[in-house]
Amino acid sequence: MKYVIIGNSAAGIGCVEGIRQIDREGGIAVITAEAHHTYSRPLISYLLKGKTDREKILYRRENFYSDNNCRLLKSTLVSAIEPEEKQVVLSNEEKIPYDKLLVSTGSRAFIPAFEGLSSVKDKFTFMSLDDAIGLEKSLDKYKRVLIVGGGLIGLKCAEGIRDKVAHVTVLDLAERIMSSILDDGGAEIMQRHIECNDISFRLGASIKRFESNSAFLENGDVIEFDILVLAVGVSPNDELLNGIADTDRGIAVNEKSQTTAPGIYAAGDCTKSFDISSGHNKNMALLPNAYMQGECAGINMAGGEKTFDKAIPMNAIGFFGKHIITAGNYSGDVYSEEHPGGYKRIFYGNNRLNGYILIGNIEKAGIYTSLIREQTPLDTIDFELICKQPRLMAFAKDERMSKIGGV
Amino acid sequence: MKKVYVNEKWCLGCRLCEYYCAFAAAGGNDMAKALKGVKPNSRIKIEKHGDISFAVSCRHCKEALCLRGCITGALGVTDGVVAIDHERCVSCYTCVLLCPYGAVSPSPEGPAQKCELCVKTTDGSPACVKGCPNRAIVFEDRGE
Ligand SMILES: Cc1cc2nc3c(=O)[nH]c(=O)nc-3n(C[C@H](O)[C@H](O)[C@H](O)COP(=O)(O)OP(=O)(O)OC[C@H]3O[C@@H](n4cnc5c(N)ncnc54)[C@H](O)[C@@H]3O)c2cc1C
Picture 1 (cartoon, each protein chain N blue to C red):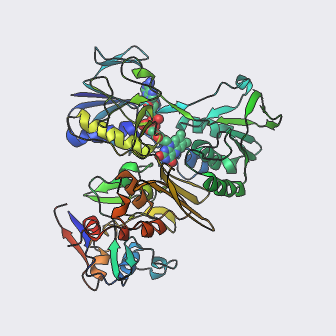
Picture 2: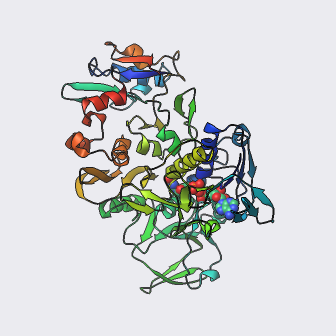
Picture 3: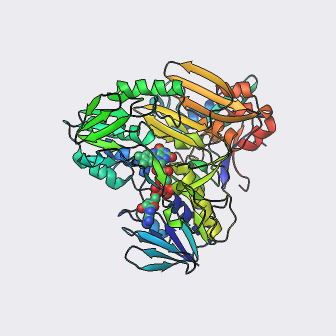
């Protein structure tokens, strides 16, 4: 059996580890456009902050590829897939045959067509190790940075570079930061906390045009900057499968990570998968989902049986020492708690937990996550108790016993 | 493999397991560090409500979600024991988000911590088991 994996990140590595649970022998080729050993993409902001280094950023150890008997093709771009011939075509025209193929090409920064953007000299996206290395070279303590996008990536970038520059401003069209994972109350707490760490916000602000070092806003204001970071959003890299399998702003996959094309699987940020907390198909650009979907693909590619049908949006993220954990969707009735430094919202309805937001005290959050993932009927647990604090105590005795193994 | 199992029928809620755990995790010679903060800095944790109490620690799941979801690769498994490399952990707590038992928690120093069956400390047999006065916590192979 010959396996080819396009992508050398969470989903691709998950696939290698999935294949090797079943098949120790078949040859695996891992192809990546990047010039690096597999690294943790989310850690690029920690690298700039000095909380990790070029060695510790590696997602798997130096000997990962040899231990797993696979071949890594770095700095290698796949330009096309030929499903009839069962081969991938590289940008240098070389062809690599496969029996089973995984597409785990991730996502790229979405760049809006701002007028005058080309006149901005020092501009970056913040998606890759190379982006981070390039950005770091430009930083110095006299420079003002404008980050467009107050989502997770833009804010992580802001935290990472804060101490290396004169000033950081984060601008967003939305009225609140991290609008994809926080409600108004939670966003306000986090905004204040991040502002206390010397980062400024321009929210509800829209850019009309750029002119070298100036951003002209719709309302007439002008923001001067030396470095521009664009972190407006991501789009899935699904083009390789256009016309070959179903794609619609993300590659369609089933619970076995199969695309609609025979022998071709897909996993991670380039896919669209079923969110059980909302019942919709979504791009869930998250590392845990990417890994688990990739692992599931690998097991199935190697002839095993595996389903990945418990995807939900979920995030664990911290800024300047304050932690946030969120999961699911925020519809239904709400249980609320607020105290100094802490914020909690639990969303429920139809006898199910739909989602939650925790800021500050995040202990045992996984018990809430599992209620969403397992679709646990809330009338089988002590819901009042578990709202106050996530705990196994809220489960019925048999359930507790089976969880912790009482005799 | 041998794992820690808890029988809530015999648990007195005395919290000795938490103390022994914290002590062992601190290298077994620094009670001050072990007992940093109001609560012992333990990896096994007692849940108590009314008359019921029991200890919860890592299940060393075969399909560990914490390990699969770890964004850095700091979580690994050796001979069935799921463990965290504190050098590589950046304290994002994705493992806390994922553990269905609430058995992974932030440490006072930052990195996530969990029961590692005392493999890195003491003599390799879990301190909580030895310390439980009522034998509510056992270390057994139940074919899992
Ligand atoms: C700054 C930042 C912070 C983040 N923080 C978090 C976080 O805290 N928690 C979290 O869960 N997620 C976070 N994410 C998201 C997370 O990084 C992604 O969900 C995850 O990396 C997805 O993995 P993937 O394998 O699907 O794709 P990617 O990591 O995007 O990797 C894609 C791979 O495909 C390769 N590739 C693409 N096209 C081609 C081609 N044509 N030919 C050859 N190779 C190709 C690339 O070289 C790369 O190896 C963050 C992302 C960023 C950018």
